[in-house]
Image 1 (cartoon, rainbow, N blue to C red):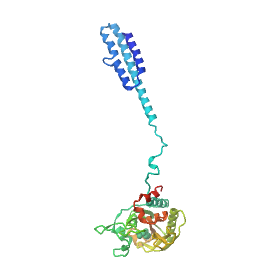
Image 2: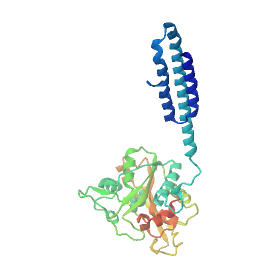
Image 3: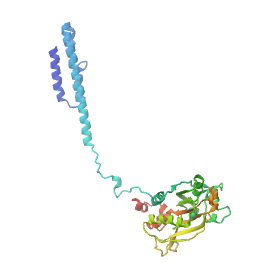
Image 4: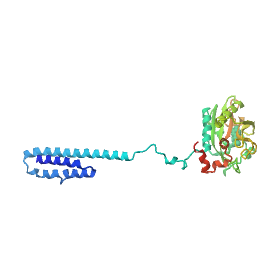
Amino acid sequence: MVEQLENLFTEFKQELEKVQEQAAILNLKSAFLGKKGKVSEVLKSLKDCTVEEKKLIGPKANEIKGSIINLINEKLSALEIEVINQKLAKNRIDITAQNRYFKSDLLAGGQHPVTAISDQVKDVFLSMGFEILDGPHIETEYNNFEALNIPDDHPARDMQDTFWFSDFKHLLRTHTSAVQVRGMKTHKPPFRFIAPGKVFRCERTDASHEMVFHQLEGMLIDKNISVGNLIYFMKQLLSSIFEKDVEVRLRPGFFPFVEPGFELDIKCLICKGKGCSVCKQTGWVELLPCGMVHPNVLRHGGIDPDEFNGFAFGLGLDRLVMMRFGIDDIRHLHGGDLRFMSQFSSL
Ligand code: DAH
């Protein structure tokens, strides 16, 4: 019987050589070790053996069963590894393959030019130690007008046609100057910050006016600040955006929240100063109104005007984008025409 078992084992090894698939291996296993398998068949006559014989056959049978199981498991795991290797070879990822989304005939997303320019301006001011503040689009009458030295009956309120809410206490902010008030309340001087964002005016649209547009407010408060400091910062800003010398002019401008106030204009880059619809035929574009913060505004912000002073400015981001890229109508910026937008997708 021992011999029979050894023969079976030899037979098993030969059979195992021949099979290559998982199912066939498992079939082979049950053909030898299953209830009705070959090994069990041989062991059926064990009951007729003497005790001495049983002592010999028992361990031998266990040894052979163990070896069969080991060989089966070895073969199965070798097979599994082979299957994985085959899959890897077949599904190799070609990391040099061209991404179909970047083929030139398909549109890729890109930054809006206003966002791109706004980021560029932010970088310039961050490098000069300014903080970036945010404010809500829905503002109080106090923050948008009153605290900025524009009382109820002031004609300057008419300058900015306002979208009011029905309570007539809230409005869509007409300028980012409202963030000045918030900034003064949360900061102790000296401080300097910028506040970019959307502003809203109830106006008729034309080549240089939109109802929703973008400004970037700036405020610097310290001791003994002069108009010279203001001009320095404005020049830094313009030269880093245009990367060339642009012709500018400074003229007096009236804004209730600054005194003195200025209009900083640049020579129109669309018509090179000849006169067009963007510069209203004047050859100059109002880009950067600014001035020295009015003492009343400082007081509203809880700052003592005898101790601190400073400057503020309100950059028109859409106009800056138009000058920078030679865009002749502000309405292109919000028109959603992909042929227009795709020109800026590399920004
Ligand atoms: N808020 C003004 C506007 O929207 C622009 C402005 C002018 C802002 C002078 C300023 C400033 O900070 O000093 O028309």
